[in-house]
Image (cartoon, rainbow, N blue to C red; front, side, top):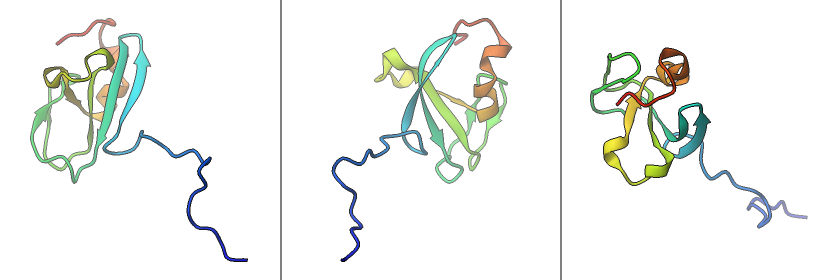
Length: 97
């Protein structure tokens, strides 16, 4: 019998969570949409709000914005991954920007 390579209709397929896809994260500072940016995708210099250092082109990082404001480009912030992961330990659970 030939092997079936195509996915079955009832197989779940991942909808996000990888590079280029926004995933939802909840924390004491609210719900966030977070997208991973690979080093190859990072082509501009940004300033991380967690450490106030530059994120240079070619450095992998994350972009995060409040989940309730999904269409607001002004609310997006680029973070170093480590700064994003430790944001709850750096200041009270209130948005600083």
